[in-house]
Image (cartoon, rainbow, N blue to C red; front, side, top):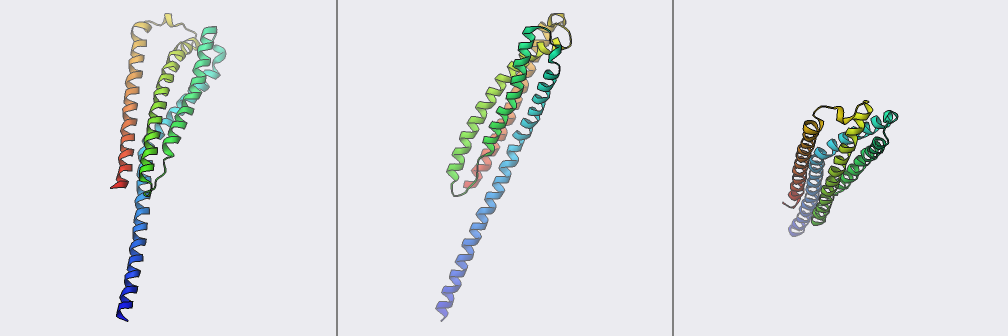
Length: 197
């Protein structure tokens, strides 16, 4: 009888340990997912803020479009408006894809592979966004000057000081943003690698 009792007790303990292990795995999975989302929020929130700025800029250009008197400036204005609407869409797509990574301890390697693919895609879309943002800057500056009823040639030091400074600031800001995003992506990758530990 004692052997049967020991066998029953052993089976109960074995089931409890299995249940405890499942609960621990689920807890690790939830904590990892929360840490991953928290790390990605350092990318998501600035992208949302940038989208608001783009839409506000597009709204301003649309609202003041009738004040643009030169046909070339109207073409630049249309290009700037279209790009200001497209830029946030590209950002939303890239962020959505990055956030679509699902966690599972059982398929750790698949999670890492999917994240690596989405990370590369996100970085490519950010590079596209930078190129488009440069076009927006180059097309919107003359339009904004024209909306004010001026010409670029009438602004002192525009070509010698203001324009080169604007370009330098654009590239400095772009470099800072990309470094910030790459650090956040690296931290997110480290969070995922903790699953395997």
